[in-house]
Image 1 (cartoon, rainbow, N blue to C red):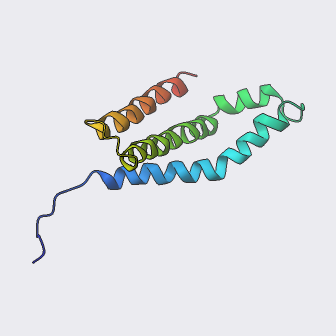
Image 2 (image 1 turned 180 degrees about the horizontal axis):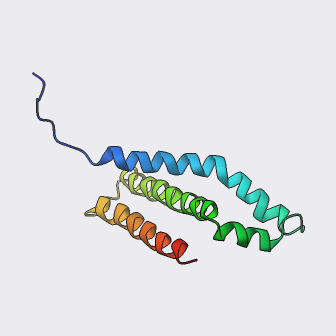
Amino acid sequence: MVNQNPKRSNEPPVWLMFSAGGMVSALAFPVLILILGFLLPFGIVSPENIIAFAHHWLGKLVILVLTIFPMWGGLHRVHHGMHDIKVHVPAGGFIFYGLATLYSIIVLFAVFNL
């Protein structure tokens, strides 16, 4: 018999943030490494252009996406990785996802106060 009132899980929103973090990391970090690791040091891109982009609304959105989603993905991996190696932190979900939430709030305040 199928349970008509199954227990709700908090996993779907967390998996959404985790998968968004993985996608952002895979797609955007190589470009970020190219810009900050090669183009900026060789003088092809000027620091003034990067600063001007960071102050634009689109630049702020890019900074938010490049910082918040990978942090959620990373902390989700740490949380489940600890379970895989049989290290169970009491209230680990609240700790790791709470840290990701706190980090997200701090980044939001930092970016909007640029």
